[in-house]
Amino acid sequence: MASSDFQRIKRLGRYLQKDRKRLFIILFVLVPVAFAGAIQPLLVGQAISVLRGEATLSFLNDLPLRSAIRILISTLLVSVVFRLLLQGYQTYNIQAVGQRLTARIRDDLFSHAIALSLRFHDKMPVGKLLTRLTSDVDALAEVFGSGAVGVLADVVSLFVIAITMLAVDFRLGVLLLITQIPVTIFILWLQKCYRRANYRVREELSQLNADFQENLQGLEVVQMFRRESINGRKFNRTGLAYRQAVNSTIFFDSSISAFIEWVSLAAVALVLALGGWMVSSGAMGLGTLTTFILYSQRLFDPLRQLAERFTQIQGGLTAVERIGELLEEKIEIYDREKIGVKPKEESQSNGKQLGEVVFEKVNFSYRSDEPIIQNLSFRIAPGENVALVGPTGSGKTTLIRLLCRLYEPQSGRILIDGQDIKNIPIAHLRKQLGVVLQDTFLFSGNVADNLRLDKSIDDNRLNEICKDLGLQFLLNKLPRGLKTELRERGGNLSSGERQLLSVARVAIRNPRVLIMDEATAFMDPSTEATLQRDLDRLLERRTALVIAHRLATVESADRILVLRRGRLIEEGTHQELRSLGGLYAQLADLQERGLAKL
Figure 1 (cartoon, rainbow, N blue to C red):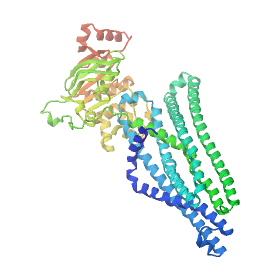
Figure 2 (figure 1 turned 180 degrees about the horizontal axis):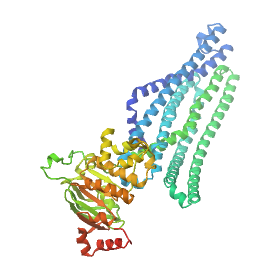
Figure 3 (figure 1 turned 60 degrees about the vertical axis):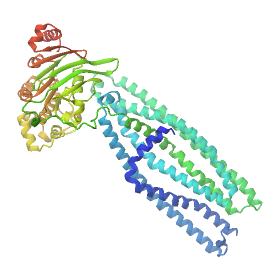
């Protein structure tokens, strides 16, 4: 195993610290379980020796035959029951620790994945991420419960059996132990081959889940454009690749099982041949030979179990690798340790209105060869309503993401009320920003929960706020008002209704800076007119940054910023920009003629 595997396993070991007592008990029980198993062949051999008058234990020779047999049978029964009880207790504790382990790891993986920046999630398909959070963690639990402790138990059992065999007859003991050498070498070689094949299985399974998830999310497009057969063929190719990867692991798994069976049979035959000659020559008793025949079978039991656990063990090591890769992903956007700076409160403003936004020579790119924002500088005064205008791909939405600190600029600064947003705790920063996006996301649950999100508001107060915001007509349409259950992504609401709720949940938070990205794009004229009064009130004495394509929305802005290829090329009021005759004037003319959007 590579040193990186040991490092990852060592780091995952901290999840077991809370179960140290249980782990100690599990490890402590290994020795008596192994001893109870190792003594059973010896007892059977001694029973045969007693019957033939060859008992090697002197106290048995002094007892009557029936008494000696009765003692051996009773001891054998006690050892069997004792071993079963300990194994049951051990298995229960192993599974309990394994489930706690997976719960802790899954919690940390979820928290880490949520904390990773959008840059990571842009390149990581959701299906692949889900595979790591589900099947990879399950594989890790399986290898801990059935593999790691089981292998350790097999090693202890092998060690105890080896000592017992050498104590009974050194010559046959050494002979049987020598047969373990080729098996061990073969297992180590096969481990490397299986590891590579199993990693490919996990990758193909991730791609399979990603394709399946993508088709389910885009089901409407698939059906409307009759893509069922095309997407089906693509999914079939992914499934075929997954099947081929699994077949390679089956080949390696079956190979080691067959090899161990062959070696174990050869070892039994060797013991019979050599032991039979020694019995016939009087150098060994029949009971001792019987003991070694049973030991030769028991000796390979740990290796057989290792072969059965081989898939789990290698799958678990692959899962450790993949989980480690995710946990090793650096969190790009985080609170600096030495800051502790919070946004200025109204009491700190000395009567001045807050909400100033400043971009200073900001540069940003998703890829180094494709700059999105280039040397962008502007200032939005507190309470100013500014519209962002520009062709598709000019960087308007990226600018909002930078302000919300969903991405970090490569250079430059973004300030709110004179404070660099990197020096403001993320929770406090985003508390001051109210964002209404064009693509509204609603969680499954009821309407009230989607409006509250992180706010503690009782139902009566929430009803009053909804009335003030003009949402009563929408709530009256819903079967249970605020208690109406929403399907995934709000599927039982129209696009306009979902967007209306997104505006309301921002208004409830009373943010200092309001950011709107085509907030009324999916609303019909009647709904938009109803909401406009509340939007005006929401914008009153509040800094607003609005992305809009409708001329009426842009005209009402205090100032308009025109972007092209990430650069600020024009700014001013609607009339000033029209008279300038630049890009804005061209876009406005085209929209008035119904040929384009701003």
